[in-house]
Image (cartoon, rainbow, N blue to C red):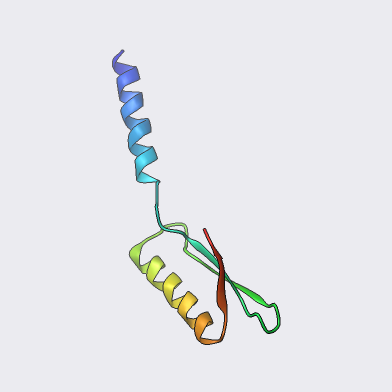
Length: 71
């Protein structure tokens, strides 16, 4: 019984820790020529990673790209 309880706590704890409500991948398109670019967050998903991700999106938008999809 104790093992089952420990296993449940570990399973629930690790499942919650890996959940992220933020999207981590964005596809952008240049509608004039159909060229697509991608911005992603690295696997560590740190604040710095999300900062670089947002800078990537902004840089492409300044070049005329539009967000096509985010997930």
